[in-house]
Structures are given as C-alpha cells and as structure tokens.
Length: 146
Image: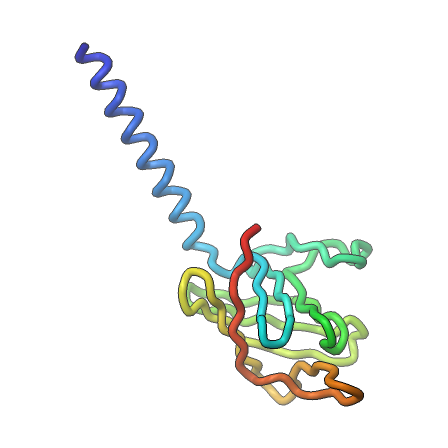
C-alpha cells in the first residue's frame, strides 16, 4: 500500500513540474505568435527570438523573424532584424518592395495583448477609399490562438 502512495506522490510531483515548465516556457518568450489588430485588420506574425516564420507566398526568401500584413495595408512588411529583452522587443521591418523601412517597439501589456509603437519618421499606411492614410503610431494587438 505504501508503494502505491509513493508512486501517486511521485506522479503528482512530476505533473506539477511538467505544468510549471510549460508555463515558464510560455512566459520566457512572449514575442512569439500571431497577433491581430481589430481596428485596422492587420496581422502581425512574429518570432522575435529566431528566424522561423515563413512568409506566405514568399517561401523563396526562407524563414524570417515575421511579417505584418492585412487588408488595405500598403504591401507586406518583413521583419529582418530584432532586439529583445524581458519587457520589450524592437522589430526592424522592410517593405516587400524594399523601398521603405520601419522600426517599431513592441511590449506585452498582459498575457494576450501586445502594444506596437512606431519609431522614426516612416509610418505604416492603409488604403482608405482612394487615399493612403497613415496608421496611428500606437496599435494594440490581441494574440490569436494557434
């Protein structure tokens, strides 16, 4: 009987350890995943820690740190460089034509929301009617489930 109790305790301890390791893994790399901004219809797909994101329709490029796309946004923006720390990441974007570049800072406001703020003079643009309209310098994205 005591062997069964010991085995149950060991299984419970192993389960708690496994769950805590999974939770730690999720919190140590917050800048990974698919994020969506409802106001603009823009999707941000990133892995700020390694080049592992394949851009749809551009597999010839290999993998990148991510991309920004959406309905009406001017082109597709590729993440070509990142700088990260525990609280924030800086993402360096280049347009799909290579004519524009943009640097943004992203921070996690909670477990499922990311705030993106543009740095520098270039801003992302979206087609509204027949005109290009600059997007706000600060956008909030919600993390999408995989």
